[in-house]
Length: 321
Ligand SMILES: [Mg+2]
Image 1: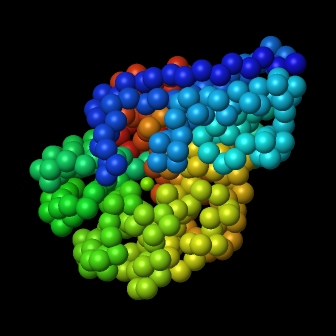
Image 2 (image 1 turned 180 degrees about the vertical axis):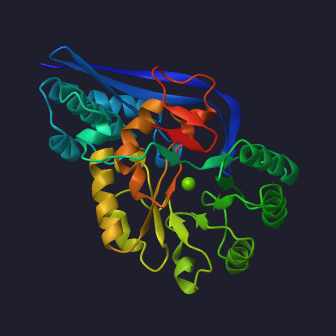
Image 3 (image 1 turned 90 degrees about the vertical axis):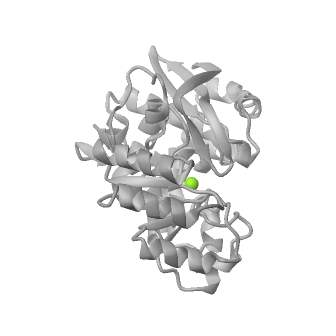
């Protein structure tokens, strides 16, 4: 028998996180805690309203499988019980954590991965005035960030990017529009980004409305985030995207995330690893993928006023392992 606990946590941010969909001032996560043979483990997810999830709906989904979880449900069985999404991620992450702890190994070693001593992570520049965004990019760059992820909406594209590029001339820039752009004007915008040396554009058009991406030769790689959840998404991405952003909250945990990484790479997509606004607990669960990706975007916990204990060790732009 396993003991199972499911609960919500709220973690205030030190700075509001502003993207095209709106602003957030706290991370609201759901945690699954397991205890088996005296060993405790946990997994975390961030429910996302964009995907129809709330803390309440995710808690309810997890509670439907607590009897099976108590009865030593395996990761393989879990994949058939819950759909991809945040709820399955919290449970899958807890099961991986439990297995690693039982083997007295770190999760990455248990998954057969050896990571370098540090990983470069993107640091996010959230939406603001061009001046605010340039100041943020300059500050992050001065503190050591080499990779900046610039959040944009449908306005001031050129003004914001020109200011940021001038403020952080040495940084690698990637841009995330979070579905806020339109087919009209897209080609010119992509060319502008390429001319400014932007290394990648993430999800310019709405998932389900991204056919236009197949109509022109991309001057920079375009990455699917909201359009890519699991291996099943890949068939619709060919010709539209060159990269996929893998997040455990979309795949429903590391089990499917590893399978998605394998399959996407096999089909010729470059890989990115992303996260939601979350604690170090959620980033730890994704680490077995960290050395397989072109871009790691794992700065979620760096937005928290206080992180879980023990926390991962971040300095600006770097995750130290
Ligand atoms: Mg994104």
